[in-house]
Image 1 (cartoon, rainbow, N blue to C red):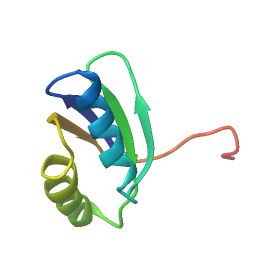
Image 2 (image 1 turned 30 degrees about the vertical axis):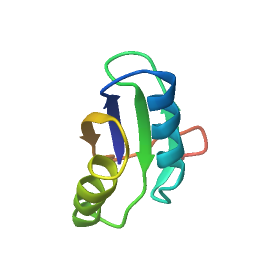
Image 3 (image 1 turned 135 degrees about the horizontal axis):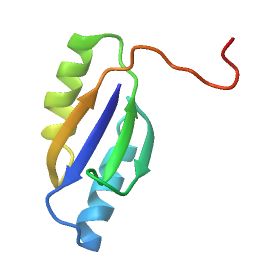
Image 4 (image 1 turned 90 degrees about the vertical axis):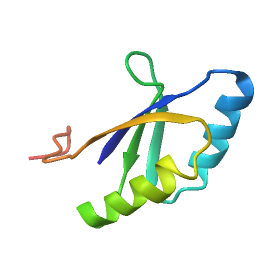
Length: 84
């Protein structure tokens, strides 16, 4: 899964609080601070869609500070240089 996250505010304190919180989530394997429509792109690993639903509701939206919106993307296939 990937989750595009937009923050409510972009003060230094808000960014630091969000980044500190996201580091505490073992489901988030990568967190990228990006440009464009989102502030962060998270790569999330969970067992299945019900597990992501729970993670989304209880971790991303409810416990991370300053989150305005989350847009989720389901990975159907991953292609990389080592994929044959």
